[in-house]
Length: 293
Image (cartoon, rainbow, N blue to C red; front, side, top):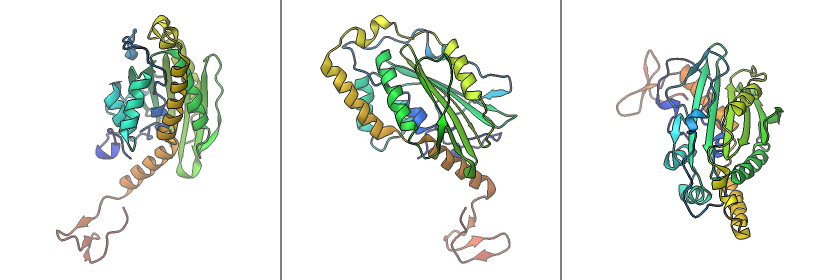
């Protein structure tokens, strides 16, 4: 299922690894699973765009159009559009109930190595929900078909890192997710070659050090204003439901997108006759079904 920034709908001026939807997993990771306070959450301060770190070197060109992952600020409706769940109604209700505040994303292409970098931050209503989601998301990530092992990074606090690989599909990804204050961060590299090294680990540490301690004051976090056991239990139930609905193996999605783009680059759609009964093989019309594209 293609997101609103599906690159198959747009022509690109340079070749790049597919960072589209750096996981249903990466995308779902921005959800705030936390009991709501009665009042609306404060606006993040500093603003989320000021929390995103720069890429590690000057040869990363910033993407100006999305190829699946969010670019710029995103609100609840656009986040739902990006997630593209089968039934958005319960997902929207969960996001509203659990306290989605706001999100911001950037992505870059490293031309020299043909690698993609994605960075996302989502402001949660409070730190408790961010940490709870981190735990649930880690468990889901490690069940992915292409999960190859954990990535260790020192100095990140609450975090997890995963390495995905499918050599036969020429697709590799390293993803680090961590929580700082009330904010959930994702740093991910995707490449068509096994050339990622320690890029994700180094960049995630840079991102962690760069980010503010929080974007909403701890005094305003729901868990610091109310501690009803029933609300905590409801939050846990919502987390379980949301994991079941939204945790999609992002690496599988990336692989499919890479393959689709490769096929599209290899062959143009066949020319069909107006009645659809013939296709042009370059020399003559043939009365057969068109070959697979």
